[in-house]
Amino acid sequence: MTTINIADTTPVPAEQIAKDLLPQKFGRRGMIWTSVLILLFLTGIIAYFRQLRQGLVVTSMRDYVSWGIYISNFVFFVAISLVGSLITAVFRLANVKWATPLTRIAEIIAVSAIVFAALIIIVDMGRPERMLNLFIYGRIQSPIMWDVIVISTYFVISLLLLYLPLLPDLRILINSKAPQWLKRLYRFQGSFWKGTAEQFKISERSITILCIAIIPVAFSIHTVTSWLFATTYRPGWDSTNFGAYFISGAFLVGSGAVVVAMYVFRKYYHLEKYITEMHFEKMGRVVVLLCLLYLYFNINEYMVPAFKMKKPEEAHLGGLFTGEFAPMFWFAIVVGMIIPIIILLFKKGRKPLPMFITGIMIVVGAWFKRYLIVTPTLLHPFLPMSDVPAAYRHYFPSWEEWAITIGSLAGALLVMTFFVRIYPIIPIQETISESHEEE
Image (spheres, helix red, strand yellow):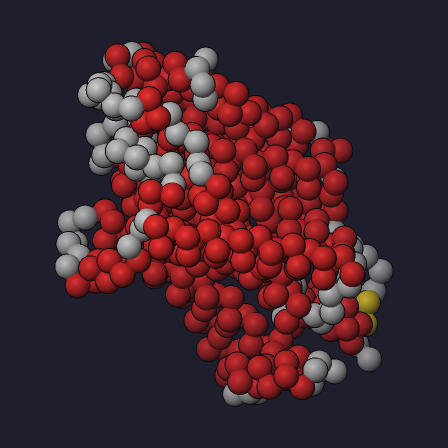
């Protein structure tokens, strides 16, 4: 028996590590959680079938607010997916060893988010069969075409970064006491992996290449997404700052999501020996830096139009700062950025529970921030509204929009939930290997 160390805990046998990190069956709370998510997801599907049958008239989107909660949700999903490139690629290339237990958490968040980002765009189109036109008649000059290209590329790379490090663990899973149907799945996915030195060498080289490739692709996703807004001449979107603004916000919300997932998996799967307080301490320092960075870009984003104060910009900023969107705006700024900064500046604030609360605040604040990027701008066009129904001057999502949006969020959580049930959420082989190096 080989004795190894995990972080700064007491020595743990290698066999015990494998046993601790193998997938676990759902308990009562897990079954309730899964059932609630399935119910929300099915409700979203029912609402979508209603939208397909009757058209986008079931939504509250009209001539002016033609991008509503769907596009807000799309931007949110795209943003949260960036965490895969931060934790897996940037930290791996920088040889940040402490991030190893977090890499698979980050990648499954990235994959599930990018899948539902693509699906929500199809929902927003109203006529899903027209998606085919992008591939038949797509123009390379269009930011929309580039969005399709980079999202597809990012999904493929993220999936490979999730799969390749999983191969050594699949061999362990095949030899475990898992149910036969799961073993058949494991054999289908990784029976070719023998664990030879040559295979490990090829795998490591492939992962390094993917880590290098995913960084410009990840930056491209958020830059191209920002182009969709910045190239549309509207108050609040007419900005050269949008690319950096989107990327900094994406790093923040993605890191917040990882912190929330770290706490949940640590608590309910008893992974305290593997996701330690040290991980929360270091992630807390990363998150507070990202909060400060994103707050800077927010100040820059609003100060420039405030200095110019053109009439349409004045109406837009007035709606955000003191108008109908002010409660949501200040909630997103204060709860999503300022309070997390205050909490995380103190060492006690970087403990697991305060970090968990802070992560939730960041993620919730980020969702509302994406809503504020889309809706207020569309309600304050450069050409003032005239001779339109009163309903066109305001926007509040219909129940179908809410159901589909909540259903998509539940769907992403379902992907993560089922993944954790089938695969180890912390890399087993990497954890053992790194522990050998520490001895």
